[in-house]
Image 1 (cartoon, one colour):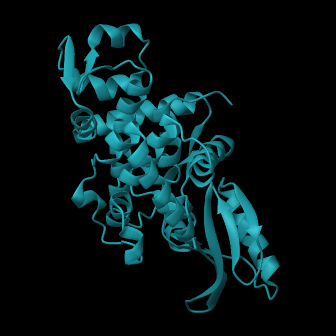
Image 2 (cartoon, helix red, strand yellow):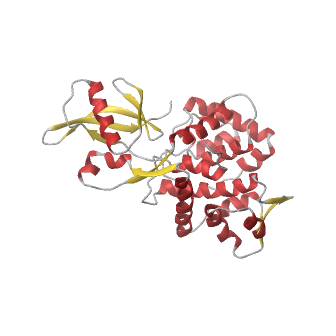
Image 3 (tube, one colour):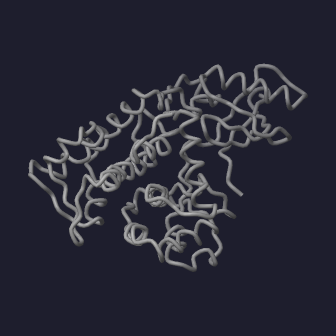
Length: 330
């Protein structure tokens, strides 16, 4: 697996399971953070020079760095045909994260094409499109799916650095900030783990100059993140500055809602019913792995965890199936 730069790495996390044909509110939040990741990527590469509090991007340096299209779609609107642009880190990240809707769409196309060319991202039927009601109405819903090996490698590396003892790299500090700003912390850490994350982030904020500079910046857009689906966290979790920041921007940004997958036959055996649903999902092109069987099974579908709950839908006759619900970390 080739080494990826920061923006493509975060994009693999942010785009997975997002709708590919529609600009949803959740995807817009992700894209804004992905655009900010381009600035952080250039900073880590020292393509943006620093003097005192200002960061300077020279157009000439950009042209000489073999810039990719996804970088250019973010940077060209900032350059405005100028030879150089100056601003502090807060200015750069906020400007990059506020493109027009057309610029945001162009950026999505550029970064997704970049990842697709490396076989790290594909466009598949959305899990939502497998829902009985969507399927019967022949509504096409498509979504991105990130390469499973790459996705797991990136997320496990982040988890290892933040949950285990040892140094945290500048790139992982950037990743943690991007997860915080996109409201996705809860997708990768359980509630118990988040308390450890909070402590580690606070320690980094106190001891690491890069973390201190970055963690104090907020680029989130209140309207877009204001889906009013905040998790109920204990007040003790918000004791520190960093913990308070996580608590305040903790919306449950759903990438896919619960779907009902009907079975073609009536099964008395729960394993047979589950296997029939898995076969149906695989026929739609989904990658499915059974993590745990039981009365409520746990499935990994296209990199994300779901609870598979036996369910009936009452029509003229009862229809048997399984409701697939995004799994909540404990």
